[in-house]
Image (cartoon, rainbow, N blue to C red):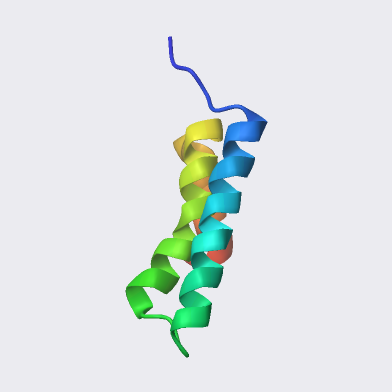
Length: 65
């Protein structure tokens, strides 16, 4: 049986990603392209685990990925 992350686990991941983003933002005047892509796609990866591929596809269409 597949287990899904809890809301608190998703919040922790998002919080950690935001902290990392802020650290990089302070360190670099402009973020490298790979970092921007990774930061942008991280929420979509969480959505994949919670809702499956169908929701990721819809989110990707809305965000342009």
